[in-house]
Amino acid sequence: MSFVEFKAFVKKVNLKPKGVKEIVLEVNDDGLEGKLDKLSEMIDCKVDVELESRVVNFNVTINARTNKPVTEYKVDEQGVVHEVKPEYEQLEADLGIPEEKIETFEEEKQADREIVDEFIMSGMSPNFDDLPYDFANIVKRKLEGESYLKLANELGISSGKIVELVDEYRKRVAPLAIKWDEWRKKKQNEDNQ
Image 1: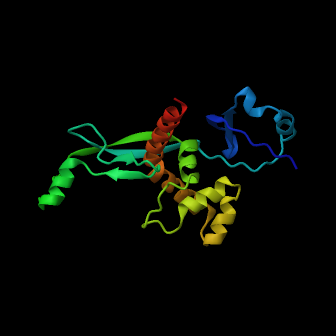
Image 2: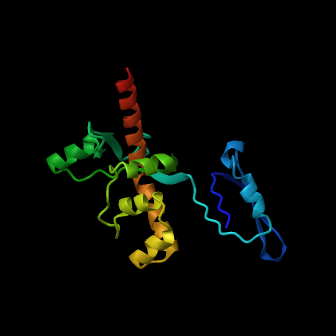
Image 3: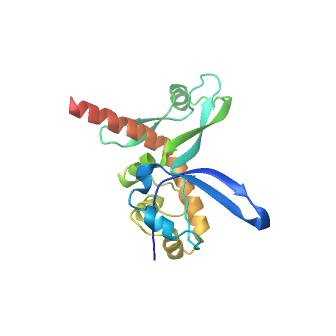
């Protein structure tokens, strides 16, 4: 049995006659280094394919007046990411003033999945009370080599559902992971000086 794993860009999906779809992948030379012979053996063979995006797309709610995110984060000395309440919200809470309605809009952002996964693997990513499982642990197990099918069977859900839930978890922790990565890089620079 041949097995080849590599990172690629999905360049095209072509619709062909009789319901056939042709998928075109683009791979750098070093991405297939030492794997081209095995891949060539698979030409005209049936194969199992699993594609997972290397990018996490998520939405950020932006304050229309200030053009800044409604939710901001800071990282403490231990690397724990905390939500920072805007000053006006804190004042409203302290004085018992009704919360001001702010005009907002959604902005789509992207995070490198590798950074999000490193954040999760670091043990710094949170669990959310409204999610039914410990997704930080599930993502760790997936990154350590367990299949979605095995994890889904263990939880009694479909493999499609676990992929959907893991994707949702990554989207929720992505802004925290970005802030954590900035903190980590800054700390490394300070340590190297």
